[in-house]
Structure formats: structure tokens, C-alpha cells
Image 1 (cartoon, rainbow, N blue to C red):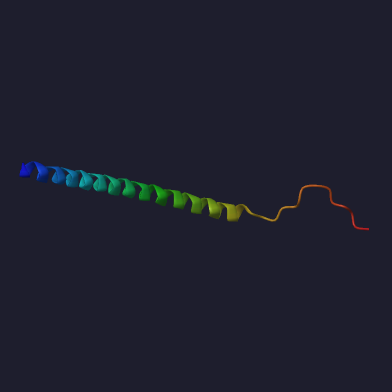
Image 2 (cartoon, rainbow, N blue to C red):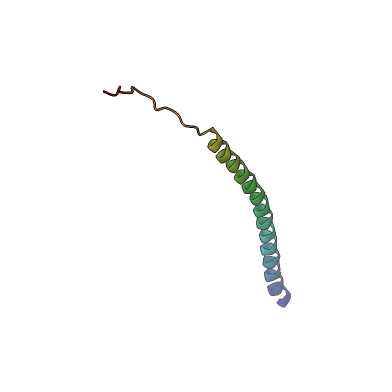
Length: 65
């Protein structure tokens, strides 16, 4: 009867350890994905800076009198 009460907490502890390990693996995968997203956003920001040139506004320009 004593072993039954000690085996339940040890199973729970093992289950908790497995869940933590799974979460850490997911975290590493997500970290890699966020790094890729950050690189892509940085490239887009640089492309936007290079593409931004002075453009004339659209519309009618009133002649000076």
C-alpha cells in the first residue's frame, strides 16, 4: 500500500518532466521560426527604404500667378 502511494507521485513527476521537455522543444522550434521572421522583416524594411524616393503628389497642380 505504501508503494502504491509513492508510485503515483513518481508517475506524475515523470509526466511533468516529459511535458516540460516537449515545451522546451517547441520553444526552440518557435525561436528558429521567429528568427526567420525577423530576418524577413528586416529585409523588407531595407527594401522599403531603398524604394522610397521623392515622388510628385498625384493631382492637379495650380499654376502660380
